[in-house]
Image 1 (cartoon, helix red, strand yellow):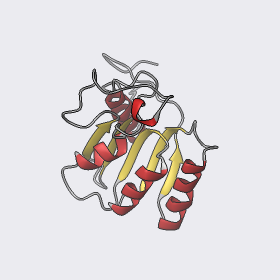
Image 2: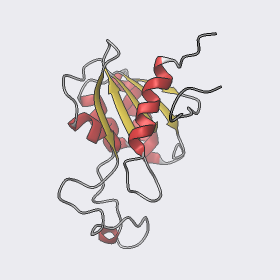
Image 3: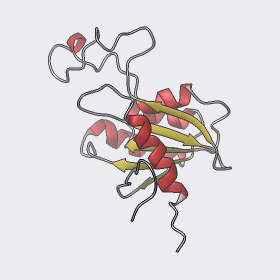
Image 4: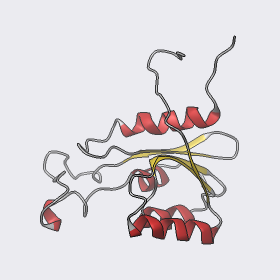
Length: 157
C-alpha cells in the first residue's frame, strides 16, 4: 500500500518544523504560507527581530511590560509574511497557533484567504475573538486541523 501524507499534513508539518527554530521557552509557533499552486512562498516562527539578541532580551511572560517578551517578539505569521517571496493574494496560511488580532490584521491586509491552524488554546481571549470577527468580515476561511505528527527520517504508521 502506498502511504503518503496529505497536502495539509505536509504544509502543517513545515509549520511545525519551523516552530522548532523559536527560542521561546513557553510558546513555539511556526507558520507556512502556500500559494494556490501548492508552492511554499513564506515561512516564519516567533522570535526577536534581527539584531535583538535572544540572550539579552527577556522571554518572561509576567512582570513589568518591558521585562517581558511581549513588546519585542515578532510572531510567526508576520515573519512568514515578511519572508514571503511573492504576492500573498489568495494564499493559505498554515500556522500552529490561531492568530492573534494584530496578526489577523496583517493576514487580511496582504490577501491571505485561508488559515489552517492546529491549536486554539487562547480561544476565550477577547483578542482572539477579535481575530475571528475580522476574518469572518473579510471572508477569510479558518479551518482547525487535527494534530499532525512530524516524523523525522521517514513516514511511519
